[in-house]
Image (cartoon, rainbow, N blue to C red):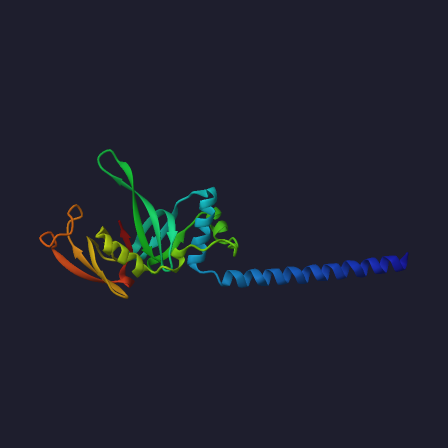
Length: 204
């Protein structure tokens, strides 16, 4: 019986040691995984969870103290597009508008405990990566330019309405005019060359 007790005790110690080593290895792998996460990674995971039924808005803090609560629809290489509820009119009705936000303008996310947990979940490597993952902000702005879409450009110190005339590598030209007017030379009151780095949000 004493030998049985000895071997049983040795077996328990060995099993405990192996489990402790495995737990330490798992914790180290998890620390490394979390250390590689980017803000974009966490937002992608929140959108993936939302697509599976969570369907919640995400609260952002943007440059210049701009607060934004939006449902993110698409994530690009260095930007995301979202639906925003705009309250307007005497009846206080709501309408949906689309906005584009460069990741460089995001100062932080104000999340619930549930959203924090979802944002940290491992991202499945098997999930198909959409082509928008590789599209930069310049590509998106060139499309808006081609469509002659009237936009509101939010900068840290002001907001401008107008139409994008042309897009460079790191900037674009905005013809400024009334939000309700189409882009005609007679309606243009000025021009602004805007650096991508200064964009807080573009509302379409």
